[in-house]
Image 1 (spheres, rainbow, N blue to C red):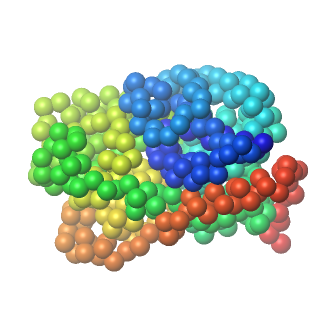
Image 2: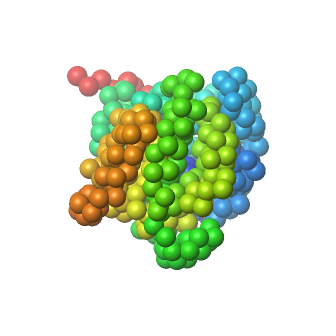
Length: 384
């Protein structure tokens, strides 16, 4: 019997994995099984207990601290992930494990898989995000992985440049595109009413720490706040930061800033369907989240991308990059709100696929497993 584990630790990651999980579930029978393992911030009240938003069968939960105030917190968390998942993989002896992206906890899961000779199938490798530790984590997971599903052609070339054989690297696009086609299906009124708002002009915002920069969070958030208060006619719907170092500080500042401000609305999590539906009708997307880079262009919505966190990703022309000073953010927002730029964005298509990503990934996973035991003794692929 073939068994595949899929590990999810955050709301954003689950949103991208969900279509693949659902496709693979269709193959389940007496000879094939998928185990969904839930961990990380999904199980934390501080981050919205997003396990409750998972619309699939959960086969295992692994609760680990999400404290992230210091590097020591992160290291201690990683040690628990490494121990717990090494135990799980040793016991279950999965045929493969599917991991997505670049989170520090997923790095620990990948190491556990490598130690137990569990083949890794990696999604979203090859991207570059120079402002975050995600950059080196993502490439590290790539080198531990056997099968690679990237989201764009530049990333495919980077994974091959890292020594991975082209016949194991596939550019099927991003599942975010099919999520938009299938899940952004609430009306504007329904989406706004679900968070207690009536019809209004609004922006959708997420601001994560720039983890390669120390001691700048308070100043960055002060600049962010100084810029958005210049737009009192716009409601700012803000989702809280993740569990990176500095995320808790950002969330505390957001809660404090939102007090007594009628147009500032802060949420721990909005859920995939509501988040994408709100994006669909937003005036623009603001912050430094990958959703502004990947999802927003597919909906022809302007993005104001602040700072260096996403630097290096494949970008659409609907994205306005700016520095993190209040003046630069303010100027970028004004451009995003201009009729000329709004009309221009309607003509732009993103570089992340045709909306059939999960079907192609699932077919390739099944095809690979049906060939028999995966040989993990990879040969380094030289470009010349």
